[in-house]
Length: 158
Ligand SMILES: [Zn+2]
Image 1 (cartoon, rainbow, N blue to C red):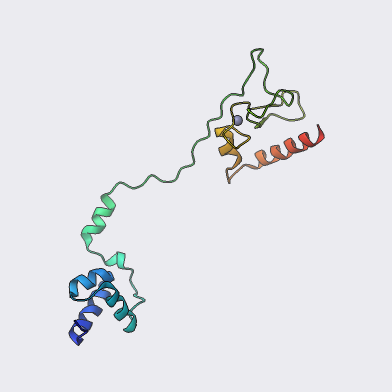
Image 2: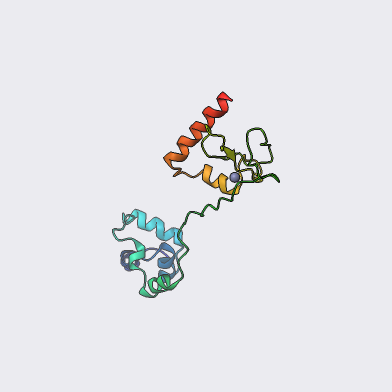
């Protein structure tokens, strides 16, 4: 079926109403979605002023609103556990840390209380789950960054 003047007018009308190419193809009958798209381009209608969404039948909009919205992206709260202590109540230090322990530094490296988290690290990471999240947080606080710097300086000097 070809493009009679009447059908072209109908196409223009439907396009202006914001129907999609496939919807228009269904309405007109006898044409494919691609044929509609091609014709729209040839007619120079392609850039329609109003987005299709705004002009869709109301019922769709209502349904869209009623549908439960996906949960907003929330940052997973970091649950840091108390650092590991051995049977004598000692925390993990530079001397006792191993590859099977989270190397997250806790405390001031210049004091004797400085220690590591010590929990089982996540596979392929030096840190446990909580500290992995913390280490790769884009909004890592300035204080944490400062502390990391201290920590690296500490390791370099020890
Ligand atoms: Zn940890």
